[in-house]
Length: 486
Image 1 (tube, rainbow, N blue to C red):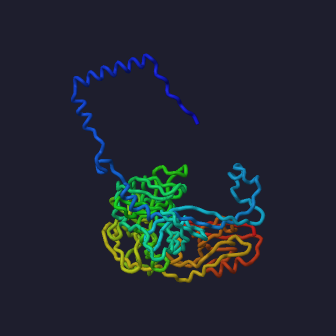
Image 2: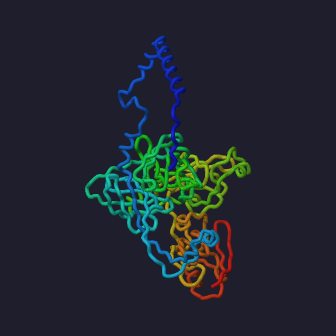
Image 3: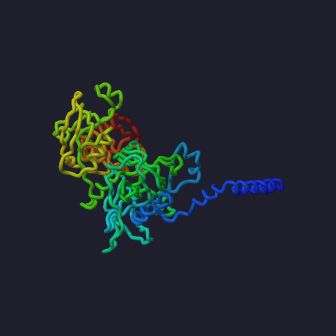
């Protein structure tokens, strides 16, 4: 530690300061009004005279924010010290392991918010992902084992429950996140870096942020309130002490806060919590159409006055959008009166609604405005998913596949609007399928010259032993073909 010493005062400097003091006293004698002005500055007589304090809000809100500890068992193989060399890892990654896999208990820390006095707690999915044991620590330091009620990876939300008997816990109520405006003052509460409950302040910097990558529904509240690792699952509240978001992600090149944090809006959180209360499974309405953003170039080609909205580029025959009279080429401008600037906004508006009733769609068709009422129904689960994990010595070993249906397509966030097929719904880390770099949502078209139309086709063709494998897979709008050794 470097300590910088202050310079000593010389005798000439002391003489100068003494002379200045004498002259200053003479001035005060000549101008007594300056003394009277000084006496007007007094110690504040009440808290109201002090600058704004967030303490009343914090005292009300903080007891409802908890710590969430997650334990998971991690399997890892032994590694040679040579493979730990950074130069080696830069080129080859962590692919080279040997020996019998060892199990290691890993513990992570996040935050959570009590949303029901009986002990219902909402947090992020990534906080509890892969966990086998969950512990919740309250603000008064009591700890409870928690039960996982619902895990919804698509929204990056999860709901836990602790048993507190007949006791009523402090909890937060939801505020309508659609009523939040840019510039509103907010507080972020959580446990960053495990240092203990911490409160930071800021404003709502932006709304409806996309391209965050933390969930399937990109409609985040952006804030400059400091959010750091450990804050995940914590509360974002307004000055009335109500919950407007669950802190979930940050933009950072260092791993710490640089004033760009993101929270899942409370309306989305509330819909997931409602599903947890109703049985633990999230059911969302299905629009039944593939959408495309309307940029400047597309807006000009369609003769629109401005960019924004969502173009229907494909539609599911017999789906809710088609039944409501919507067509390919229509441009959706609003859902239930809320303007939608892109497909993400449309998906968010539907995802925050429950099943039953209708949504009012405002659209443009050939330059003319129109409205349609789309029924809020669940996507059909036909054909049955028949989810199966592929085994054996083949490129797909370790991948879980399912028959493609509107329900599976919606679950995986795919825009496909019909046809048969088999889709990869999950990939086991470290498996052959993982090493080949298949992805969740890849549609298997053909393997070893055999057209794949249902799960049983893929199971049958992968049972054989082959010196090499050829396959074709569709990812988004592109088709990839490859040949690998058997």
